[in-house]
Length: 443
Image (cartoon, rainbow, N blue to C red; front, top):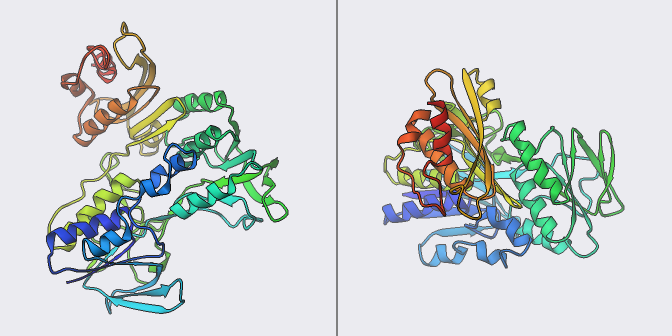
């Protein structure tokens, strides 16, 4: 059986390893336009600020390891430009030589991830304007951040924007965030985002809301960000506007996609085309709470979907159970956790919901070192079916958001949280965990 996998990172190599384990006679070819396989993209901001010493530290397995240890024909510098589902071939160009290639497959996995969005702004070709997605991106940023860079402007206030704002401040840079909307971290509701804004300002970050970037000015290197309301002097720009599924090369195949280009897959990670699977940031993600396809590109999801795709490509029968919309971000002293639906999403879906907010401490109130956290729960009005939660605080957020994520997966109601046997000792918790305190008030 000839397996071809387009994409050499999380989803692609998770699939490849499953095929290696399950099909001893497999012929596996992986294709990537880059030269580095299988690395932790979420760790790259911490390489830039020095918390992780080198990009080498975030590489899980080298290309050579896949070749020599696992027998995978791991090709680098191979850009795929076309898939022919009738002839069952993948074709493209070898970047270094410009030579064309064509490879036949029996089963194909598309795991091409997503690309950072950088609109065709006037002046976007100037030096000093960067995006962050890959190790080469990271090295380019590190090379550019010399002592001449004092003012950094970040366009976009999502998770990458927040991660990098902290990294730039850690490096001693002045940081400005320009956000088209009226808040940072739009996966949180406005009331919770105020805590994020306060933390940003306390760490010297300039926040500009409601301005649309139109272009850049400079003589060879960026010196000014131009918006619809004015100009902002800068020495460096990071565009963190978001990502777009890397699926343009599939145009004309007839493959079914979401509006943003993400490939629609069923629970077996099969696409609408026979013997073609897809996984990771280039695909749809079934949302268990919304009960419909969504798009939330995360490394955890990519690894899960890739593993399941690999199992099924090798004649297994496993299904992807879906996501509940969980994410977490470290932002200076705060941890920002959310899962399920925000209040905004619940409203857009027309759900009959209620909201409950309260403050609590991460450990027993009488134990030294306690820290406050803000909790917000969204649930169905009559049945108290859990819809989502947002928790922001200094310590203990990760523990609670994971408990709620598990509760959402199992479709628990608010009252069910009272029956959970959660760990307790004064240095770690109160006798009633904060999420149970909230449930107790509403039950």
